[in-house]
Length: 281
Length: 277
Image (cartoon, rainbow over all chains, first blue to last red; front, side, top):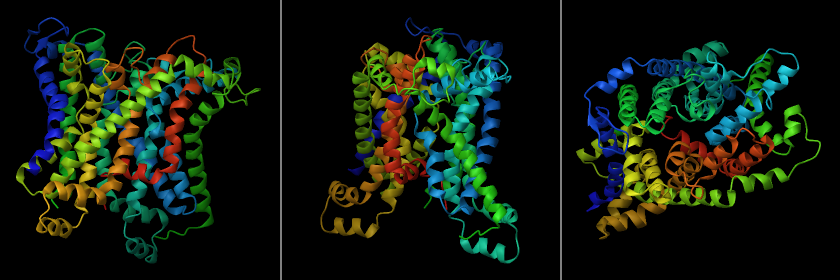
């Protein structure tokens, strides 16, 4: 009888996720405006994407995004986490503050940065302009918009990594560290040869998650620039959203979603493999 | 673990941690500071102290973002999601943690995979399907979407709490003639209740802050969540930034207070599963 206990979860999952996900894959081969009946068009949606400059911009932006988030926040998180390990006093306070941005709603974080920091009228950027510095609002230039958004997401995200790395570092056996110290390893050597290898599984997992999340990124792009100016900060998820709800090209949106999912799937295979060991117990 | 270092190392460490602290707190400080300023003062200098504390920013924000209504919408939606995730999730986690059947392993991997599924993979058919069924602007429908999206994560975390319950307790209860339901209700639930509390807290945070699904499925003026209402208010070009920051603070403050009080649970819950010894 206890088998029935999983039914509510399964039914909700099937209705909301599994069946619509299958429909998305099917819709990718149709032309549909969301109202009239869909028309089968074969691979036309994918062919149209191939010839669409915005699609390539979006895909490139996702890849740039992945590279940024694989390096900067992970490095920042590791740096701060090892320093928290040294700074015994106050470490829980620092940890709490670093974690704070992630509990603030993305819409709010986005607007605070937009209005209070980037804005040439009401923000710090404007203040510096009036003081004679050559500062511009990164969100309004095609060459910098993506990086302006990434900075906001970075601010929102790195502390989470720091807390995770700090927790992992504290689980590295103390004897290993002390043995290294006794043998005369310097602080940096201890980090390089004892602590980092000790938390390698956690770092790997976070890197896999970063790849997955980088292809899902939506909120900050949609809130800060809606993919603009001139599609320069478009990512695949905002591109799909705009196609579906503004252009009513649902088939095209579905095709983009399939592309996002393929990238996600690749990373998910690694993710499941990394997690699988834990589930064999 | 002891990493005692020289004075110079300590100086560098605290200086770096201090700089990171400043970077983290600056935008938050700007939000708090400017929520109390007139918009003309913000234009002059967003860093300056207000010449007069403008508490009426909060009254204006409350009115313009229709918070009396939208905060209630958010609270109801969040509460429904918490109840749905905790009930369905704990039932599933119990089975997955306790029963060794091949099918459960497949289910576990399926749930694991769906924690990483992009929302766009199911969003569009779901939206147009719900539109046909008249479920747009329906908070109950959105609570079910949240439940589907957050359940896999919740189940994975809850599963570890269920795994920690000693087998002997369950066996003893079964020998005494208890049914599986009684074992679940009377033996497991009391022991894993701290885990369920953590899940409730994290799921509550996620639903309260959620943007993409809320902005897509709840568009009627009287159905908006607080976050979406804030987003629309702050998107107008004529906006008064003092008022916008006050609105932001109204939404953020309860969360931050809860976070500071219960930070261990928050951190444990959100980082849960990511850290492996």
